[in-house]
Amino acid sequence: MAAAEHITENEANRMLASTLSSNNPERDACIFMLGLKAGLRPGEIALLTWDTVLDSGYKHGKIIKPKKFTLPTRIVKGKKKTRAIHFNAYLWNALHQHFLANFTSKKDRVFLTNKKKPFTPVNMRNWIVKKFKMVGIHGSGHSFRKKAGTDVYREVHKHGGTICDVKEFFGHSKVGITEAYIASNKRVMIQAAMSI
Picture 1: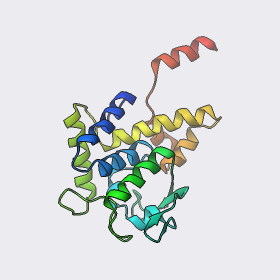
Picture 2: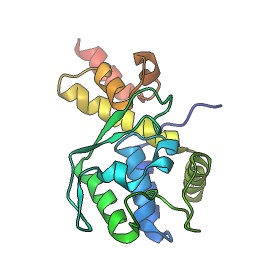
Picture 3: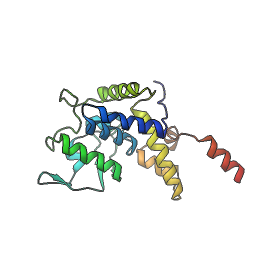
């Protein structure tokens, strides 16, 4: 299988803008944001249930913003350990809008197809590729994940962190795997080389 393409900030914004003309803009934006801001794999997004995402944040038909939710081993690739997913303002807003538009019950899957059937990991991957093609971008569900990795690495670096922190964000077993998710920036590399 070919490596997923890295996408630019502009391409990510084009994908998000494309949701406005969708049959279900809240669902589509939430799917994209889970990839872009939380680095979830398409298969993990497909298998999410409302009780997993809302955890203890659901009371009397309303949701209260939790700080994070935990991906259970049944969803995580490799099924060996859980992974914490932290909410930032963008991700929370997307999830909240999707909840208001599409929530059914706590035990149901978070994302349903236009035919009201739960997405499978395979049809979620195919659906995302189709959405990229509709916008004229060569990408996949893992392209969102790679964008998240690049963004997280840059933020972590600003705060004195290392690639090991990004490894934890993704739940990877080895740093070498994480390195493939971070796009290089030739301009930044040249500036750094000139300043040492």
